[in-house]
Amino acid sequence: MSGFDKYEKIVELAKRRGFFWPSYEIYGGVAGFYDLGPLGTLLKNRIVEKWREWFVKRNQGFVVEIETPIIMPYKVLEASGHVEHFTDPIVECLRCGRKFRADQLVEESLNVKVEGMGIDELSRLIRDKGVKCPLCGGELSDVKLFNLLFTTTIGPYSQDIGFLRPEAAQGIFTAFKRVYEAFRERLPIGIAQIGRVARNEISPRQGIVRLREFTIMEVEFFFDPENLECPLLDRCKGKLRILRAEDRLKGSQEPVEVDVYEALREKIIKMPWTAYWMCIARDFLIDLGVPEHDMMFEEKLPHERAHYSAQTFDQLVRISRWGWLEVSGHAYRTDYDLSRHMKYSGQDLRVFKRFEEPRVIKSYKVVVNKALIGKLFKDKATDVLNLISSMDVNDLKSKISSSSEEYIVLGGYSIPKSAVSIQEVTEKVSGKHIIPHVVEPSFGAERLLLVVLDHAYSEEDGRVVLKLPRSLAPIQVAVYPLVNDTELEAKAKEIYEELVNGGFYVVYDDSGTIGRRYARADEIGIPVVVTVDHQTLVDSTVTLRDRDSRKQVRVRRDEVLKKIQEFLTGLYEIT
Image 1 (cartoon, rainbow, N blue to C red):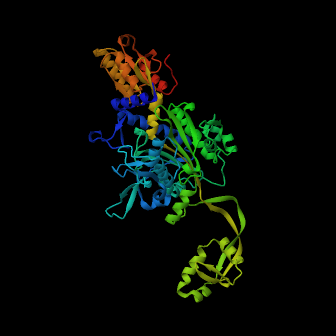
Image 2: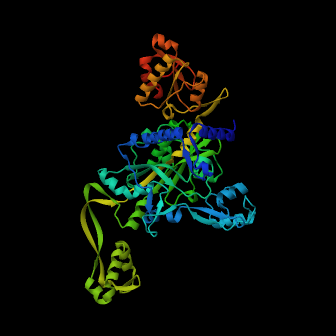
Image 3: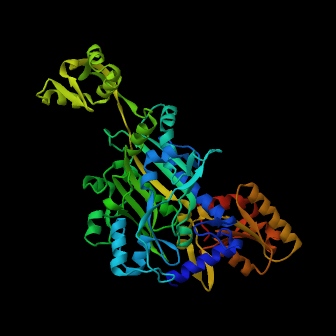
């Protein structure tokens, strides 16, 4: 079964059995939008809850979860750099008017890698190599940048521009101080958010892989940049498979296997907390049914990183159709976001770091002869005073000491040295203000849904068996009467109701032969089937059937709920 065949079969299964399909199908669909059906919604919810378990619940001593709005004011995304940097290259056919994502078009036309190329380089490549419109063969325009933000207005005034958020992170950064104070002002602290985001992709393809609207799961983890210790590294068992940037530059596509301590010692990973969350991400993917040999972390080259990142690793998973697919990003965002929001909002987002013991420190302060400034500059005196106060004291001290004149020039004003002096002061301080640094693990839920289906899909004896991890199965149990018989059906429905009341997602099915019903259950990944037969009426036992092994075992009727619970959590096996 080739990768193309397998993917097409997964898509066919997804549409037919209710996992996913293109949105607005009755109107011809809209690229980049997909509906999740009943089974897809259940599966996605289980993936999201699994992510919450690994990233929030297991780290609840220092990770909390919040929820912020989808719509953001212009100023927020201007401060974050998205208004300026959240772009992709676009090119237009001068004959038919169709628009394409330029880098993808060039890569497909010329079979070369162009990631990180600027728009001038792409334009030159298109021109020199004669790349044409793939639809009509027309000439192409110069490449331009297209901003991927979905724009809207807030309220009735058209000038109040807002955006649909492209990531959950900015809502976390703007709420950071509130959460920090509610968390008893402790670092480190992780703030998690799960929610919808929107990106106005130029030409989304690859089905559910590249969407214009999807669910994101992110943690922004804030820590003291002067204390890089991560006390949880001992939780990181085994090794990480890392494709280093320097190896990529040499043409290698093979990852190296390193434990986290070696990766940090060799500076492969800059931040200990980045290494910790990469380990959690690896274990999370294993829990979703992805074997370690089918995943790795690829370090991004400088020109491939987002504008806010000092180091980024993409977690890649191998799938049948497209090979290595990015499922998460792990970025070291430094203090970029908090610093930018401080600048644009005028609010102090620093935290106070208290010393173990008060310290006596020497510092310098600026003393200004305001009367002399007022006499010399009159109506401009306020501007001059503001100019002096805005300067860093050390820069001002250097400027005064390095000038051989009797005055210094600031902002076009000649200010006498006699009007400004720098005095050394000694004071006892209990702490200092710092701007926390941030590392970020970020996942897209819909991509993970496809990854899970791709790794679970199998065919046995001409039948589809969706070997989902038991904890992810949308429907957990099926209950069948062996044949159409009033007494058997009554007993089966009784068990069905008991399992539903026990908190399970259950299907009852009495249509068709038992073999056909087993096949329908296997096709949507139901891990276990309870079958009521004539022996049930004699000794109050039923059979449990394991989806993967097809083995069956008889258990007492009053043990069914307990055995199902143990089977789904791996505490009991059907042998």
